[in-house]
Figure 1 (cartoon, rainbow, N blue to C red):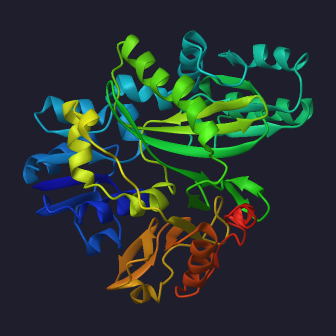
Figure 2 (figure 1 turned 135 degrees about the horizontal axis):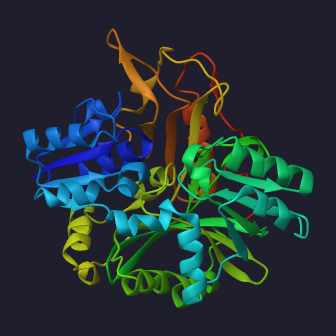
Figure 3 (figure 1 turned 45 degrees about the horizontal axis):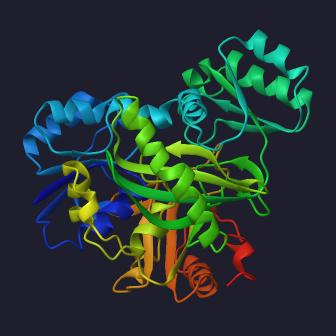
Length: 424
């Protein structure tokens, strides 16, 4: 079969790397792709939000399956448009993707159906938010309601920081229209864990757990990013946590979406906070996480195409989802200055060191080609992933592998997965 993947980041590279293992796959296309994806798929230039161009490419290629990777086109309704044209699509509808597209919708859903989450208030007018802050307890969290590339969240220690945050989000529009509405949330403490899942509208099958590192600097310092590294599985996701989440969160979310007339088929990403009072939902994503996908899919034992088709057809209950009994760690190599200003077009060397290695992966996130040379083309450039018998081994191997690749202004965090050293 022929498959078209929409997107051009590390997530899509990891998805395609899993797809090529399937005996069902004859040809893979990607729009727009990147320099790494181009090595295993045929790439077509297109902005993922240019739905007319995407449709033009799809009609020219006639793929048997289209996979929509990023959040923006899902929330914008690309799956609906493609499905309406007769294509078989993996990715939630616009109505279902609102689970990620609006934080206020997600919070209201959880409140209505008793799904554990932090206390919150929603504001459409800045003046009302300022008024609320005068009697609020600190610290607290400000969240731009819409999509903000994983950066529309501010943790505020006092009213001065919170006032500045409301101004930046709602009045100065630092995150664009994502800040037209604001969620002010109780600050929760504990370890964060990510759990991805396949969903077919009624049935949910959980993938292995993972943990992301969002801050740019060591020790969780600096600005929020799209993710500087991940590990899987999380030793903090215990059997007790799993039992609680299965009882009160996972199926409850799928059932709630069904009840609301927003049947969800695709990927639900559960961002969890393991608090002293039990697990709470921090956020939902309506697609594979990035870079979480880069440590989760390399451990998947199933044929990814078979699982995705089961989701589309409502047959997920027939799938026995399995993951290898090992571990993976991903360290993101970024351009110095990310997530603010950084230079592009810098030549990358050493990528050939990953060839023919089954336990090492180099997923391209922000790369391009210039005169037959692979160059940097984004803030997050590469995701270097290694597999190991346990997390400590995988972490050691991943950091060793980061030294195989070179480009000017290369930057990485040095403490990805450091918390696991005494846990496994």
